Length: 254
Image 1: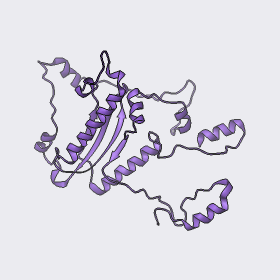
Image 2: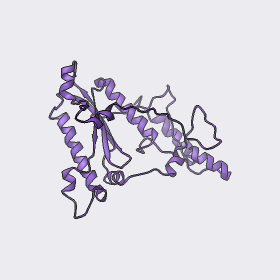
Image 3: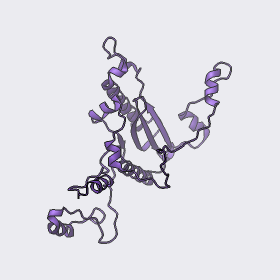
Image 4: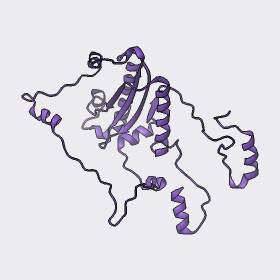
């Protein structure tokens, strides 16, 4: 809407149709906010998450390399990377939910993201049953396996785990531009300006693979004050739309 308003102001004309990126458009702020609220609904019902799992694609997996033609590299077969990662992710979820490798899990939620190099990875939250939750150091050690490299045998790895860096974050602004406390983002313009999409991400979307999923179905209710539910009206059918609106209940009061 901001984009159309700015374009209309420049051209001194009224837009025929207002178009926004709805919450069903994956990858934009509205979709992220809706998915977050869905995940919070699961947390309210099942309790807070117990495990955070990061599952990253490895282009050197044997299942990928065995399917290469001569002289091919992982960058040549983004389709294989997407298919193998999806199968391995499916097996991981089955191991957690059905095979109970962390004992009994009652809920889970995950999102698929793509690294700067293009490789896909999954961030997953697991909610365990009350009797399966880690409650002491021994139960944590059974789930998590990590150690600091030996300083004598692996000095470089040891230093990598201990060296720290000072990082200063600054907001990139154009020369002469002023910085306001609240930044307005024209979401349509951001999308039209395009963003970097790697080959594995493009193939993942072309294959219609899920970008997020959760264990529970969530019904979203449109919250509103009494008799103030939103009504969507087309300019040419105002009276007809108003008549239908009086007979139709919103999801909150249906």
